[in-house]
Image 1 (cartoon, rainbow, N blue to C red):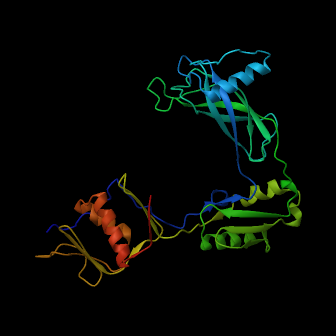
Image 2: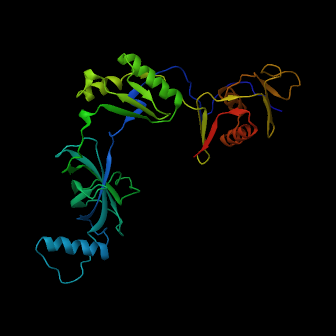
Length: 336
C-alpha cells in the first residue's frame, strides 16, 4: 500500500482559491433591453478561383434574379465554379445608429470548397421582424489559409456591414431599470440590492428573485440614465456561487467552484484507501494502510492528496461521482 505525503495539484485539475474579492456590478449583471440583435440574409460570393458551387437551383435562381435587375436576360442555366451561395449573419449592437459599421460572417450553403478570394455582393440583412436593418458587402477574409485553414467555407468581413435602420428606443426616458444576474444566485441578488441602496442612499433597488433586481430611477437621475448606470455598474459586490464541480470526461478536466466540502467517509479506489475524519491525523505511520485526513477536509485538500499519490483525472472523476452518490460530497456535479 502506498501512502499520500506531498500535496501537489496536477495540471488537469483546477481548484480556485475563493476569498472575499469583490467584482464590479457590470461584470455580474446585464441591463434589460441592452443586448445585441441577430440579423441574417442570403447572398452571393463571386470571384472564386474554381472553388464555388458550380451551379445548383438556389445559386442559379439567385444569379438569374441579379442579372435581371442589372438589365441582363441569360437564356440558359448559369453554372459557374466561381460563384457560391452563402448565408450572411451579423449582430446588430444595442443602440446601433444608421451609418455605423458592423462585422459580418459569411458561410457557404452549397458545394463550394473554399470562399477564399471571394467578394460578397450587396446583401440585405433582416431581423426577426422581417425588416432590413443592415447591408453587407465586400471582400472575404479567410484566416489561416497559409497554414491550411480547416474551415475555408466560412469567412468574415470586418466592418463589412452598414446599419441602415435603427431599433427604436426610449431608454433615456425610463423610470425603472431591470438588472439580470448572469448567474442566478439568491445571495448575490440580495447583496446587489443592499449595495445599490446603501450607495444611492435610499430604497431604490429590490431583488425580485435569484436572477432579477429592479431599480427605480431616483428623481435626480431622471433623463440621466447613462450617468446613473455608469455609477451603478462600478459598485463593488462580493458575488456568491453554488458549490459545484464541473467535469469534462473527454478532456479529463475538472473544475471545482464554491465551497465544496466533504463529510467523514472512507474511500477505497484500486490500491488506494483514504479515510476522512474520526481517525488519526494525516500522515504515514508504522504499518498504516489507510491515509487519514481531518474531518473538515475540503475538496482542495483531497485533490492535493490524490494528485500526490499519482491519481489520474479518470480516478478523480470516479471518486467524486462515488462521493456524491454516497452523500459525502456537499456540492453539485455537472458533466459537460
